[in-house]
Length: 605
Image (tube, rainbow, N blue to C red; front, side):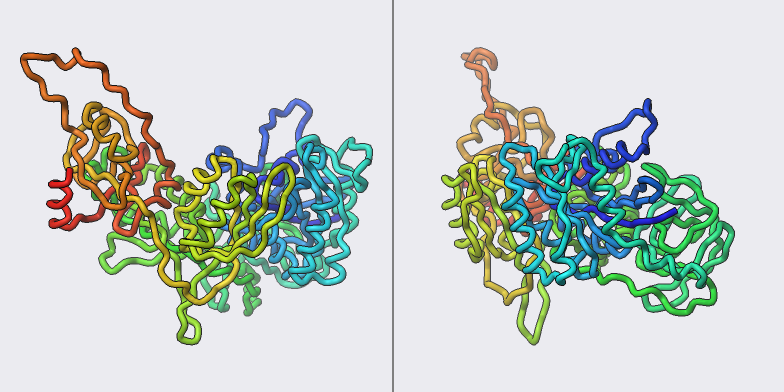
């Protein structure tokens, strides 16, 4: 059967996974009476909850005698390690762009990777049926982006499709019939070249592993595109590391190919196809699986280095061990090493004491997803504030800066620019009207300045702003950047909070918890209205006398507490604070407090 391998790349929420749903339906992958789910490729619970793609996943459809392997890629730069590996498996890309928003930061990120590999893109202007869609403007911006990224003349001569993934149609003209996706299918078959590997089917077998998975019945699975030769179940292979060192020799127990949403066993894998191989015990991502006579490993695509690090440690608070089942440092280390094996964008280091581990990655979202997965598996952890990774170049300290693209209502643009270019030491690159009363702001801001900014940004724009960020470059260190301005309210007692005590504390600042909740000494229960930390007693009840009863006064009415999500908590804490994460709850706590400061605060309160 004729073969095509293509990846769908786009910014977050531009409609990749929804378009793949329609491609599967219209290619006849589903039975007529088969129950289907929306965004079928987002199989992970967190992907479904957040509406984002985290893991790259492959599927295949048949169109008029041609099998099309389609890879759905993450749109967020934090998961760019997935994109970089996956693009080496395909021969073309569909670049999906929202006709209203135009190219966004993550569009630029994934497109730069695709153009660097010499892939020829097809541009799909999606959501052209939206009321605020401007397909001509979006197309001009896409062309300018191609030119800025150094696209070749052949890549600049890209075909364009106008589509609505949700409605299930795509046309070569904006005023086309709008019936189905046949125009997109035909263009993929016509524009994307068949795999060059097909010409090497007579050579010894070799394959570069790009993703790692597991099956409860057949064990470890490595997925990749067959570079040369053919493979049958039962063949003996060896695994080579990136450096060409021999890792292991193994017998192939099963070969699986993507057929629709499932993987099915096949007898023979041929050069050019994307398959999963089972039978190995040690080989992992970026290793080469090959015939015994091959000596050299296939070069693996380099992965961009991590930009932030977070310290994972055991939960040693007074309330530790009440919710989770996995609390030992040994178990936490095993889980982190397992994650680093399948996710090449993450690096793990042991600290000298062995009780905590430094996890380096691409961004706060990537760390947040890893922590969320671990807490759902029953882990209890303590998490430090994210720290930016610096590096030395010619004796000069360099730090990462990010390109921030913001869409806000015009009335809030002044406050946003003031925050970014003032205390956060960013540089304004561009500011222009984006239509519908919106302003688009593009700035280069140090990564340090963006840690914890998301919550402040949503407050400044009253929840209407949209912020996207992507790694831009390394620049000389810009000097100290002020962290959180407000102090915190810290519990000085162990026990259960009392409504009367919290009611009296409301004048001191905003609270993070309500009545009848467990607290302990050192736990952060709120944000102080001033810039210093304050120890308070949230357990202090009303004094009762024979002149009044506890219920005779007016009932205490508490303000609804501010509940922070996991990501918000990690971004909120300061360097001397930790986030305590359990399967049921997220708490904040102070690491230590100077005795003199404690006395001074006690007198003040």
